[in-house]
Length: 461
Image (cartoon, rainbow, N blue to C red):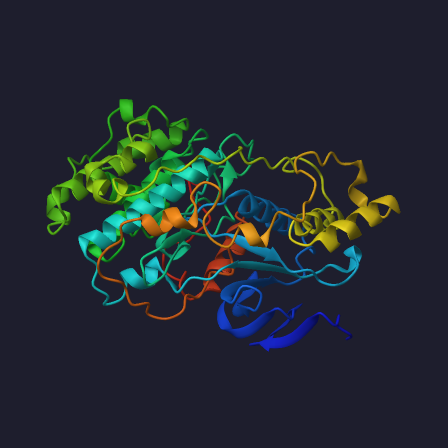
């Protein structure tokens, strides 16, 4: 097969990459059911990046739509505590020949799961700084009207200086989206908020706060707090630890079956946090208790968590963030899009990084070759050659690189165990057990960590 002179081809394991010559292959860092991730040196910036290949990305319309949503969301978010998309590699083919998507992303040294389950010493300063950065990232993501919905340690990338970035937005949704699978696979089981498993159809930002509380507990314990074997066992563990919820605390449960199940559990007065976390400071326990509150209406908000005295040392030395400039909007959820249309819309996203792709898109439009001509594309503005890789290397318009450097950090660095194996399954469909199980099992870090697809009590008999 002939390749464009600007491209080079290399083998990454059993996967062939055909990408721009500016990216020099270093090593494979992850693989999964939905892609292969390699690290490359970007010769234009002199920095290492992660490049994820999604093979035959447009064969399945559902998968392709999720890819498009995530690309658009990553391009929309610009913050030092969220992973950035730096480039969509131009395939150097006509639009109709575009098959494989190559996403160029921030490369970090490891992830929080590896750090937690290593012999690496973690001081209270480390824990505070990690939680602070998670919350700062969430505050920004939420300001865009987006819930992450799948926060867990393996989706938190870190480096040796303790900088942290939230990644894996494959399950993220706008809080106002009319999402028909809103109560399906959301958040790895061990980090799921009660309202997700209890069939609530109105959950909001509190689900991410609950997940952060579970992560804080895991940082302290060096093991997950709620290791349920299934969602019923998960709810049982939560009930035993927090105590039986009152009738008032069950107001959000719209399913009568789910309400009866919770009320049928053995009555519990809860476990003293001080007993489970004997080495944690009183301030850490107080924040943890506020995050792990069963009733989402009483759970601490991200803003109040950031203002908590436990995080004061880092908050007081940081500069305030500006919220995301506009809410994220994905207007194609209820629009029938063929694989060809999704290919064209993804190419249009590529145009923000490659002026030549924008020109090719416009030429195809003038020639009447585009399937999407009948669609309203006003959701995204016209591509601009000033938008893209140069402004998205680190940080955002909300927090500049200078602001990041001013942040107080723990005195001790951490030692990465090894380069992170990026979970290449983050665009996996969430709607079926078979698909999610295949995705989870394909990544060694996801096996036996509470991933499942049957998530809530509307499924229970």
